Amino acid sequence: MSKEKIILTGDRPTGRLHIGHYVGSLRRRVELQNSGLYDKIFVFIADAQALTDNVDNPEKVRQNVIEVALDYLACGLDPAKSTIFIQSQIAELCELSFYFMNMVTVSRLQRNPTVKAEIQLRNFDASIPVGFFTYPISQTADIAAFKATTVPVGEDQEPMLEQAREIVRRFNYIYGETLVEPEILLPENAACLRLPGTDGKAKMSKSLGNCIYLSDSADEVQKKVKGMYTDPDHLRVQDPGKVEGNPVFTYLDAFCRPEHFGLYLPEYPNLDELKAHYQRGGLGDMKVKGFLNSIMQETLEPIRNRRKEFEKDIPAIYDMLKKGCDAAREVAAATLDDVRKAMKINYFDDAELIAEQVKKFSGE
Image (cartoon, rainbow, N blue to C red):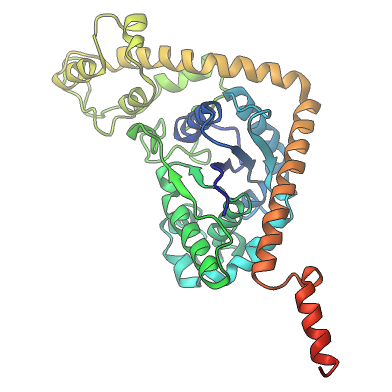
C-alpha cells in the first residue's frame, strides 16, 4: 500500500463560498498545501453531487463552478501545489460509486445523521432522489479514487467520513488490501467547527440567506455584521449580555487574533476581557460589531482583491481546471485498475484467467 500522505477535499458549486467554508476548511487547506507535509493535494468542485438536488437547475451549478474556482484561487489554493478539478469530468468516479453500492445497505444510509439532516432541510421525505440518498457512497468514491489518507472537513461531515471508512474497510475485507482508509482532519479552533449564520441559526447556509460571502464588498460585509443577531435580552448597553449562542462572539472566536485588540480596540487586552465586560453589562452590541467588522474587513479584503485579479482572465481559470481534470483522471484511472483487478473483472488484462480457460476448454 502507498505510504504517501494525500489530501482530498472539495465543495459543492451551489453558490459563492462564504466565511463558514473559509474557517471550516478553506483556510486550513491553504495552510496544509503550504506546509510541505503532504505529497499530493486534490481539491475538487463537486458539481455531480450538486446536481443530485439541483437536477432541474443545471445552469445554477454550471455558473457556480467558476465562482468556486475563483474563491479557491483567491483564498490561496495554488494549482502548482494542489490539483484542482471538476468532479463530473472524472468518469471513473461513477464506476467506483457503482461498485461501492454493494458495500452498504439501505438501512445504513438511512441512519447517516448528515443525510438525515439534509433530507429534513430540503423537505425530501419519501421523494428523495436516489443520487442524493447515495451521497455518502459517491463521497467514498471521491476519496478512494485518489487514495486519500486525510480529508479536512467540518464536524457536520464526520458521519460521512465514518461511512466512507466502513465502505473502504468492507471492500478491503472482501477483495484484499486495495484501498486506503481515510482519516478525518477537523478544524483546530472549536469555533470553526460549525460557524452559525448571521441570524443566529445553527448553520450558515446559502439557502437561508444568512451568509457573509468571501467575495462580498466591504459595504455588504459591514451591513451584514451590523444586522447580526445578538443576545435578544441585551436591550440596553448597561444590561448584562450572553456570550454563548451569540454569533458575534462566535465569529470573534473564529477570526480574532491577539494583535487585533491593539489595532482596533486598544482599551481591551484580549477577547476574554471583552466577553467579561459584555457579560456584566456596560458594553453595547454596536461597539462589539464594529470591532468584528474591522477584523472581517482585514480578513476578506486581500481575498476580495485577489479574486478581482483572477476575474480578469476567465479563460485561464478554465484552462487551469482542465489541466487539473486531466491529472486527476490519470490518478483515478490507476485506482480503478486496482479495483477491477481486485474484483476480478479485469478480464482482458488477466493473462492467467485466459490461460486457465484455454486449459479448461482444451480438455487438458
